[in-house]
Amino acid sequence: MTRRWNRATERNGCPQRAELVQRKRSEVAVEMGNDHRDSTAASSRRWLLYALGGGLGHVTRAVALARAAVAHSLDASPPRIWLLTNSPFADSLPLESELDCGRRIVRIDPDWSRDAVARYVQELLGKVRPDVTIVDTFPRGLGGELVALLPALRCHKVLVHRDLNPAYVEQMQIAEVLGQYDRLLVPGEQAVFADHPHAVATPPWLIRDAGELLPEQEARRMLKVRSDHVPVVAVIGCGKHEEIKELRELASALTLQLAERAEVRFITPALERKQGSSEGASSQVTSLHLWPFLQAIRGVSVIVGSGGYNTVHEARATGTRLIACPRSRLYDRQDRRLRRQEKVLTIADMHVSVVAAVEQAWAEGPRRVTSYPNGATEAVAAIEALYI
Amino acid sequence: MPKKEWQPDICNEKAGFLFSHACDRQPAANCGNCDKPICKKHTTRRRDGVTLLCTTCTKEAGAEDTGRGSSYYDDDPYYYGSHYYGDHYYDDRYDRRSSYSESRRNDPRDFTEADSESLVAEADGDFENDMSES
Image (cartoon, rainbow over all chains, first blue to last red; front, side, top):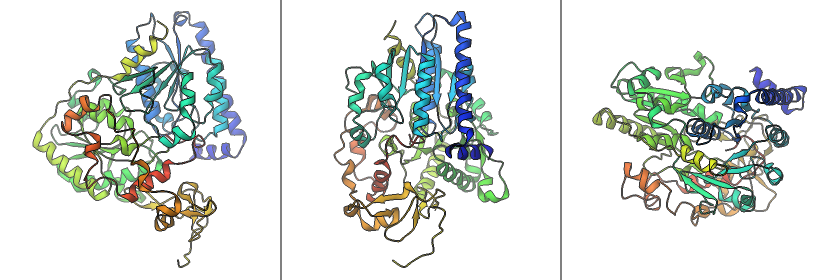
């Protein structure tokens, strides 16, 4: 509640905004100071991961790349990563422990205006002075601020190029800014400029390699499932506020409907209030604050959620049944990403599909998650090829 | 349309894909047809460039009047080419014979025209101004 109030007052131009900007500036300054004292890191390249954008997708993909860079770098020493995010979930994610890079995770308030974001990005680039800037999804920047900054940026510039709303591509003349990028990385999906001479296609980027997934029984314990054989349905509560609310209601209804046939878990990166009586039927559901979800996927039989990049590719890579409802986004096209056998459009179809999938899981018995390629590793090689 | 009593301080349009519920955003305008207070997200501009409509009245007015139709994606080439890994890496797990374009035909779960319209309506928006979008 306090945080929400603060955001509201920041929007209205009260001192909190200036205070917050100053705090972020201080953090970056402290980090820069620490770097200069860190002689062992002196030879490392600096990568700035620009992961602005709502939801969880941009920051999760950036973390996947950063983890791969630390684990699979071919350089003499792995790059030092700065990760910029304005995800509304960023405060509740253990980003520091995922990346082990302390204060180089830069969280900015999701309610900042376009101008405030632009000013901050410019300042951050000036202070970090990255050797490589990696921009996720938005070639011009989320607010178009990179158009003016990219030409003056003396570093390698990499775009993570995914499918984009064609209206955005046309209206904002995206093709014109691509010349600023030394490399376009296409992470496992068709994209409009996939044939660009600088484009390198990879499999989807995932936040865990196949070898890092928890064994099934351990995953079930993480999901708070006692049984070793009852199918587990994971409802992924992500996206916008109202969507999370809807999915929580769905998880609650499925909990009642499936009763002894399956264990239903509501998995969300959002920190939720303690459930009170006013939540009604939603209090029936077992809710878990778990991120990244992929680590526990071996314990899951059916994933229910939306058509976002990570949900879809994590399910496909691990061969986990996905039943998803495409959500409307300004830039991303979830309806295009989802395949016929994954997609449902009504609550009635959702229930029918989940029940059928649970019965199929009973019939098939324990499933085996086979190995999969993680495109993030190839992406690291493609980026390092720019300077090694 | 008969006059209804609208709540003045919130968007009176219904939100939600699976479950219909009240939209809790601040209203930015009133519908030019039914006078419903509506937020920016639930506002559509009529072809005349002046009249603003709520989502409900937009649907009733039809695609012709709002410049939106089901043909938006019909000629879209983006997903008719091959997927980098799709046909080889992933599709085998589900259906060796399927391709995206094949899967679009005659599927009862595919989007209806109204569904498609609602997605297009929100996707053709105010680019680079909303910092919460993805």
